Image (cartoon, rainbow, N blue to C red; front, side, top):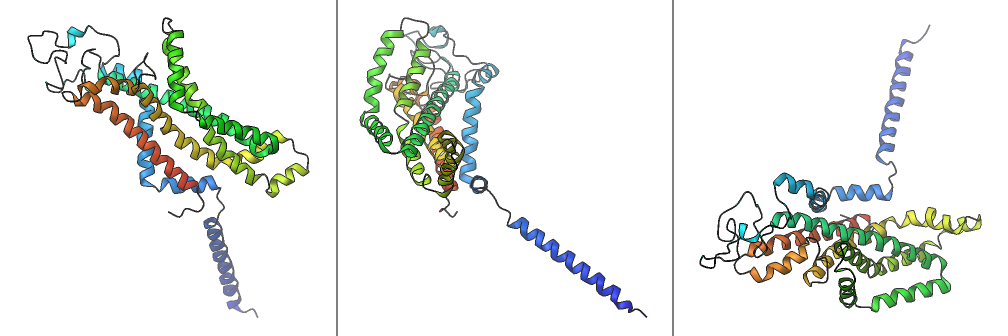
Length: 344
């Protein structure tokens, strides 16, 4: 005779094994391996300040990309207008040289949401949108060029070592000794004299400013990458790649570069706001972009009208402050998220 309880015991054993395997699967899922970048993005997503700053940066980026379409949708333009059509030109009336409608002496004007610039009659909103476009275009391009060149120099100096490292380090130190502002002041008159009478003056100004920012902005990235490469080149996986005869270019691009993601992201996120502020500062001093709308140029024009027309000055200043602050805070958050020693 068979024991009827045996089938029950077998069923219970099977159910126990299945329950144990389910728990083991859940535990393996909980301890599933994640890459450092995935961990960093997860930590960054939990940072409310970083997410708020990312939204602000995205807002300015979208404005820079779609500035012409936004201006058309709002009915504003950077086209030159007859000053007396929008400004008070009658000396017998108060507020000569100021807008006939909107601030500072009248109420809100829906046709010109940001008001009208005194003396020129330009629409402030249209110039604000184009100024955002100019700032991000120049700062973004300069950041890209300086980062690529700095990464390349840092990789070569750190991996080659010896005389190559000494020469590149000397070049870095040499460029660090040249005052950035002095170089900009020297180059600006040359560009003005060479291209001021031509149709490509605005383009020449932008290209020269991007060049100045990139030439004097790559040294910090190069130093950072060089230091990281000096520590990485003695690791086992690099020594193994050398032993098996892997080409130097492949070692640098396939083995070293992926391990430099964190310092590269950090340097880029901190260089971009510095270039935005530098572009606005140079334009304010009159040696930046003058052939197209710029926040710094608008700030320079608005300073004399601060006492009567403060909104004219505050609009571009708030744009610069918000963008630079958001980029700086986001860069700090990215640096903390990529730092394995940080616990937040």
